[in-house]
Length: 533
Ligand SMILES: C[S@@+](CC[C@H](N)C(=O)[O-])C[C@H]1O[C@@H](n2cnc3c(N)ncnc32)[C@H](O)[C@@H]1O
Image 1 (tube, rainbow, N blue to C red):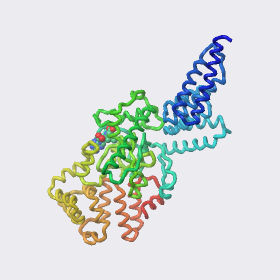
Image 2: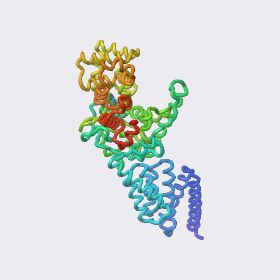
Image 3: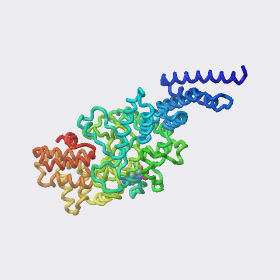
Image 4: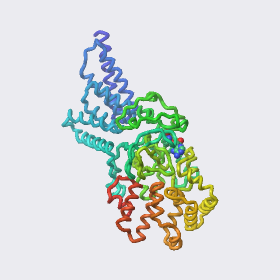
């Protein structure tokens, strides 16, 4: 036997061993090792195939296709989406209708929210292998992709069934969605999200999937080592997940690199909103680089959010479950103390809707912290975020806080003076200062705690009822000024129940308020059930 023939048979033997070993590792779910072994096999196989002295072997081509496909699967398990997609494409170059590869590629594209491309993969797989044993699974994926693609285009989310089931069972299926908004230079700070047309209160503005989230149980009291340690562990895990996502996916790396790290926000580039659409390809200077750890930490500091879950908003409690995450598009929304939007979290998605009517060109704003608190508390919370808020409401309240009576009212609020006295004094002072319209709503929202305590107490209302404005009047001004809130809803519903359940008009008002608070994501019956009407 010639030396070259001997070498060829040694190579073939080696490839055979590598292939079997890699398959075994894949079955044993030892992803990293199987990736390494497939890589070794692939490299030998490619050298072998490209050798002009060796007769082309269709069997070897098939093995190479399968090796790429299997390595793609293993890479998918390690969440290396880019690597996995590249492997799928290599396999498909060899056999363009390879079923297993098309399924794998479809699943990756689905988890990257690229619904249309995923649909294409599943469709080709279906056309070419109509009687495949896995056709039920395939059709399941195809249906799921079509549904998500529709949701992502229309924003027609409906949580009614989930709500009516008491938030039990599977959470509603959610897709990424971008409503009538664009990113523009903001008058508040840096870039912001702006309405591209008039938007009704309750309408969806965006649904955005997290780059990563971390959830955990933290002791109720955050004081003490136990709470602090648990918080630190959660934060560390969260940072690790973000680092992993940025190194595994070019698109994630590009998107994160567009976020503010808190420095020179005014000079940051204003990205086009299309970059955030599910199907968009990314092409940025960061695409092949690692983002510096210090930059990642600063970006997370400025942009990560604590979850406010949808179901806990209704029950009024989140228990000791806490979640933190990074939602890239939602990170472009600035804060205002008279916000026009609200956010909720379901699974890994954040859902942002208009909490008031929004005019074309108006900036979308969220309350990063509780906007139903007095100026002093809000200022402290803004400082924790690292900025000074200069919104209309803050400016107005800063002027008012210079008045002597305001100092007395604030002092009374802090030391817990009877709520009726505080409300009465504030209302009388507003008359003297000729505070009108929205401005009244601003101050009432700042002292909402005392107003709600007064309205919820039959005893106090008997004493003060005639000397203070009616609950409906206060609620209307507060909602117009800063938008609704679960706590405002609670006062309204209590008031309705106390007056005998409320007529149709009251009921309609409460439902309308509910749509501003929770968004138009459920039918009337579900809304009625969560409002307890
Ligand atoms: C989540 S980012 C919002 C988007 C940011 N403006 C940008 O250009 O990327 C949060 C940062 O925006 C700025 N910001 C948001 N709301 C603000 C406000 N009301 N006043 C001043 N700065 C604000 C602060 O620098 C804050 O740390």
